[in-house]
Image (cartoon, rainbow, N blue to C red; front, side, top):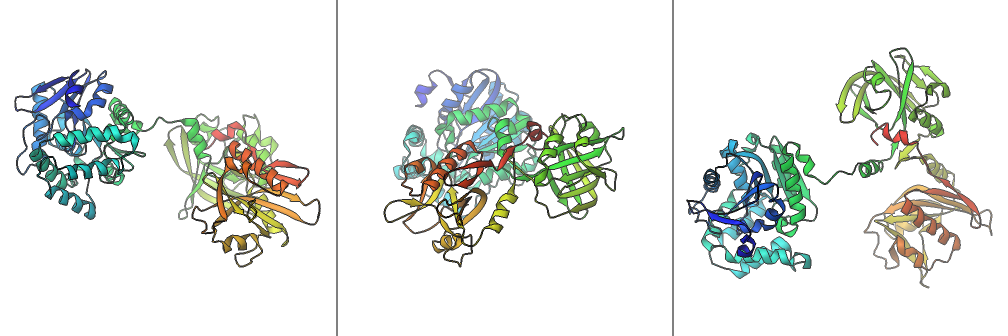
Length: 596
């Protein structure tokens, strides 16, 4: 592979015998391979980066065309080799990308000659191996010395790529195998022995590491673990960690496009290493934040002209009990930002389920929001809205700049609260958790209570002797010790379920005194050893034999609303009724008034 790949590159040799490959033009980047590889292993990176970078891939001592390292080599021997090459090429400074052992050499260069390094990318680097892992590496190092030891090579390939090797990694594994079979046995052994003991070489020196540094590894790398990269990034003043999901130790050749993309993004802007992560999808980020169920608040203050000001927010949290501190966030683009950021205080009004209208008004751009609500001045003069579940009247403790928002930290001067049900907010919509709580409390003991229990896109069913399927159901919610109740029947089969929102309530047409209540919920994966307990993919539910037509209809609705991520509550009987939204979409402005 090496000769064929290098045919389009400039392969050369420095005066000291160091072999290297050079290609491309632009900002210079030094590429340092790992133990057992050579400069040619960077073929993919060179091809993808040569349009914007002057790439120099070095053969480490004992590898490729370079001379052997000393018998008892140190990292400095490899760093000095790289610096001599930079001198030969007339390069004052470079960015350095090192893989595995090459990452240790890259760190040594940066510490030994900081003025020669612009930034560093450490791929699959080792750091402070745990005792068991360190012992295994030392034992492998002690056993080296036989040229072309096929059993040792096979073990290495299995460790790097898996055993058996997945089909999609066969090409990368073959490339690595060819390199290992070609490397000088003595050079490999001397270098590996150093690699086996150098994992803590820079433990006390990373604090001196002033360069922008990206420590990147794979989530499945068992030898250069994510914890190692995270620890190095924590110690280096300008260090950042990036873990690539699903990748192993040889990710540079197993997933070259992905790895090279992150290298290039980092080299383009090394002072913002976080940008080397996956491209940030702001709408998707907002949806992810919306998965957190919060309350809804109206934050109020008095403006410079004595006028009441307010906005809707769900970005509220407690901060401290002693002293009593709370915080809320306001978007810098919000109309009221100036009034709140210069205020001496503010009040937080936690809304009840009956205050959806008020929430919408204060999330809008209405001219006089306070004309539509009843309110009273609090102890500090801030407006307190009547009917709120709780109010916190605060003095301004601190204003914190935070991206496109400002954080208002308030010291609570006065507060009050009542037992009303709070208004919830989740996934861009209002939710009313009190509906489920009240239904649970009000359900008569003989009510048929069932549950749609989900686990990672699958719903739990009980299979009957005739091959039909039923949802878990019992007489009343009950308790684990009540064999007839829903909880009792779940407990009897060791099913650990968590009930959530109400999903359907209907009366039995044949027996009007009988009511059916079904909840949504979740269940742990390890649910039962009973073969008649099954988890069925939601898209396969339509093919199940379900005797009760009302339950069939309910499940059809569940599958549809699950796809739309907008649930309602069915109320009626098995013949007719209506779906009442559990979550009422909130005004768009409300989404931007807090974190979401």
